Image (cartoon, rainbow, N blue to C red):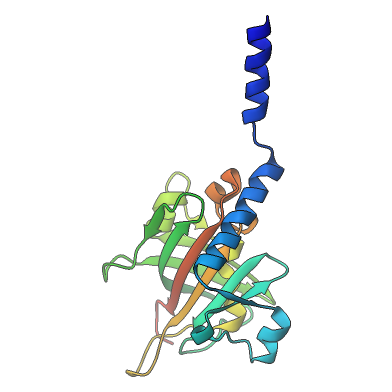
Length: 205
């Protein structure tokens, strides 16, 4: 009888609550910020700077409503997504899980590019991956994969177009996305992820 009690106690001690997992997530994010020498700025400072982050200082803005940390590397050429617009974007990305360092990426081959269909309605952006690695990895039964909300936080601050000159850059952002704003794997396991995204329009306007 005593053996079974000890076994049950050990099982209880091994069980992680949602609060335990969230604390591990917070520690993983703090460790990543520290290891990467990231300077965190407030949204107020971000807006005072003209909605830009200083990459020389490795600044990331902490977005209060989502808990996402964002760095804008390039605002991008072209124009912002207009209110009421629906458009296809070509997306390259690097995804790294901050809990186990597993990685997913499509930035090593010119033809390996994802396609994201984005719609803007006022200040709300919705999107889905219709082609590429994100869809095949996280999509359900071959259907379009709805992009996590954390992936979309940069759209109010960037332009999306196609380079026309040697000086033009496509939009590029870096994000630290908590599980609450991530995809289904992030949500289910309470895992935070680091991302690098670049966006450009599929069709030149």
